[in-house]
Image 1 (cartoon, rainbow, N blue to C red):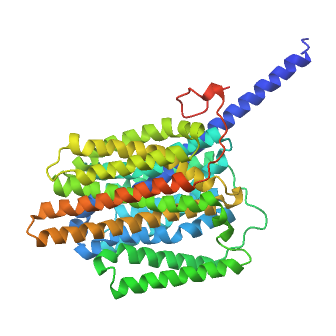
Image 2 (image 1 turned 60 degrees about the horizontal axis):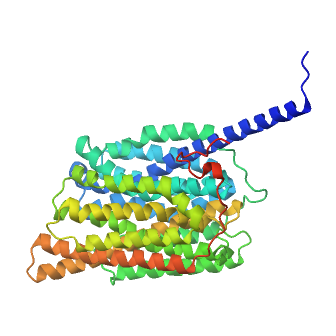
Image 3 (image 1 turned 90 degrees about the vertical axis):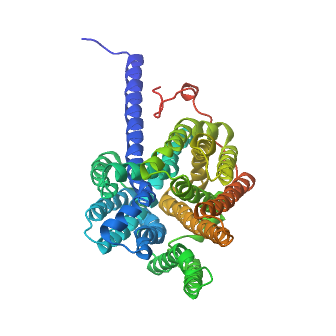
Length: 505
């Protein structure tokens, strides 16, 4: 009979611990990929529809005015329910809320893809927006809970950052390919098998919820006030260009949204269990990152929309060609998000990569502002595509880390909802403002005798220039005001690893 020595027993125990740690680490990364896939569906749906709108209008008989509701119905519910969804994640459990959101989004996608009429599609899009808000608001909080070490968290945020920032470019590509090769129905139906796979994988991979005891009270008056304020604000913004920014409708809606939001802030100061504890905004990085997020989203949303418009209506690209033109942006953004961003954060902290990335995005928009009416892809489009891919790829990670890094775990869902709300509102407002600027300049040039294409091009140039200013301002605000966070130095064994998962010890 063989007798084990204390040293051999200790060695076996150490090996068992390492095996268990390796298995847990692999499970965390698999869970990350599941969360990213679920969130990718949501991000794609914010841009994939744009290329297919002409086909949807023809098939379902939308008028030019009502067609906007295919986009607006989604934006309205998505923007309105982000904060409430994030808080529900903290109260009921982020895993439970995530699964409920994915199931609802999958069903709504099937309704949209099979919609027999315009009204069915609009209702389906509204449900998609509500479910999308639920998924987006808690996915980031779940990731923050999965990864505790700075090195792993930075790498995980790089992956998630690509999904959130690169999803817009992927959406334009997917919309062009699916609409061009199949039909517009498939931009929605493709979500059904993906959603089912995410639900099955999430149930197996995501850890059980750990809801803080005694935290199940929901601030109903606060939820009603802030959701109403956000929905009114989104509705006013997305309809501002059509109705006029000084029209009675727009002014009344914006004033009503401001009043409701002021009432919400007042209520939160005295609520026993507030929906959004206002002390959250006393955290410097949380507040500054919201400002950066608004400016950055305004520039990014505008870039995707205006670039697609320039390619399609000025250069004459087809829907499929527009989608393929965004491939370089997607590839460069993917590489920088997954392989570069986390290393820059670990070496330099959050401020330098954020500042440089946003500055490159500003240069990208500036180059598009200089692109001629008869521009070529290689000389006038591709450089901007590549620069934006680099800038967004390295900047998004530190923005997310800045917004979430100072928040207590039991409020991570709320902070995630706040982050997503700032991006959503910044994107909607920025796009509306830049489209208004573009339309004004286009009308002025047309009145002066310029051709339709030249007038549109001139309007786009001004809008791109304003977007470049927004991105540059975001770089300055982040670079000057963000508090540098101490980041741990990665282990030597991991420093030169190119894999997404941590190397085995």
